[in-house]
Amino acid sequence: MTRGPAVAVVGATASGKSALAHAVALQQPGVVEILSVDAMGVYRGMDLATAKPTPTQRAEVRYHLLDLVDPADEFTVAEFQRAARREASTVWSAGHQVLYVGGTGLYFRAVVDDLEIPGRYPEVRAVLEERAALDLAPLYEELRELDPLAASRIEAGNERRVVRALEVTLGAERPFSSFGAGLLEYGTTAVAQVGLEVEMSVLDDRIGQRFRAWMDEGLLDEVAGLASAPGGIGRTARQAVGYKELLRHLEEGAPLEVCVEDAITHSRRLARRQRSWFHRDPRVEWFDDPVAATERVIGVLNDAEGFVRD
Image (cartoon, rainbow, N blue to C red):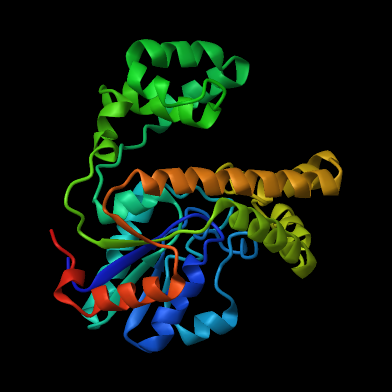
């Protein structure tokens, strides 16, 4: 794989990562290309509540890893990892610089730390999903017996994660937690990481204002259009914060304002989880000043420190 200069901008949703990355790319036009590391940004048509760059921004800067599949499709972290490797190699082959940006922590680790991703076992999964539909509790107890470490990291009521952990444990014939050992260890990073720090009270305000702005811009219509399209919205895509809540209004008749407030609350909780995830990584260099963070990103990209290391 071709390698070259790269840096990652990380942090919680609404922290200003995307604006910072775009500003960096504009300062070095045609040189810096942005690779979006967002689990939901890969879905076509899911634009507003994933905070995708606008058409104008995409005309100014080249973006990668957006709009890869339809919302009806599943797109795994392993598939994302392969796509990210391919796109980064393309950027470096052109003599350009890679700027990773986004808030999906697991995807970042998969890309910058080259994590070993568990395989898929469709036949095993099909059986587990049938059992989960009847009663999830016995599956969680089975996971506790086979892989207590994995079970301790998963909420008993989280069907998707319980099924996935058991799928891997049974299909690979090794504990699901054994694949995640890399998440607990922080070695020498291949890609320098710059974190953008914002006070939670400020983030909370931004998140509320931003979501209501998206509603004014037509988010409900966007979700309705996706839901009525051939294939609709698949299991993974419909878990996206903002979309999940508005689907409750469209499909179940829940009051719109209640769903909007729930979406804002869930977005704020997501910001806290993202903040905690990235703060556990001692390799992230944190800045509360966007100007200083921008200077640091540009400095890394144009220094030997920014060349991706094996």
